[in-house]
Image (tube, rainbow, N blue to C red):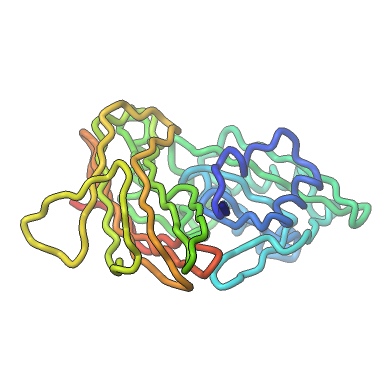
Length: 314
């Protein structure tokens, strides 16, 4: 069995950050995702546009789900998969920990509470260092001071937020904010391909409790040879027939902040390469229904997940 995506705690919560831990990320090819970002050392150089870029990336993490930014690791793009390539150190003479803290605090409004910066000395040179920045998810929305813009994480990038997304963040304390995600994908070999397990979860990102949550999943371009089967999801009856089934699963218990709730898993057969589009809808009592469209790109022994669109149903 091969695991291609890892649980957030496994990836982001080592007890101690050191060079060996950073090299583990590189050797295991832990990919960038919505809560993990790699930046090469020159991103903090004096002659770079570092103030604006640091503020954009840090505020986008806080406005989204929080996460980790590692300054000092270069990345490579392997067919749409952004993996760490090698250590590309920060020169501590150009950017000390105190300088990085000052850039973050003076270029983001309001200030983000709870940020932690871990300097990691590197053996590549006497002034070589990496900075691991852990950014908590915020209960308010943060703005980049220089351009008065708000950013979020989307498809592994920092992009401007829409007006409704800003209001969503401001409502985190008063209303449930439940979002869907595709979980840890695993595979097992069979005679003519792989059987992939595709689990689905929902997470509440608000202090308010979510209740009576339901999820629907549609594989929009599934083929008969994929032999799709579902665990915990059942086929939903629809008035207008479609070329594919809609599956539904419900979770009647409360979902508290930060908790992932498992809704069910799909098994499908893939031989060679194939791209599948999946539409997810999420309903929870008292909040607006959300949708998300993701693409699963199966490339033989590996798979990547791309969020292509998301928003509200009404």
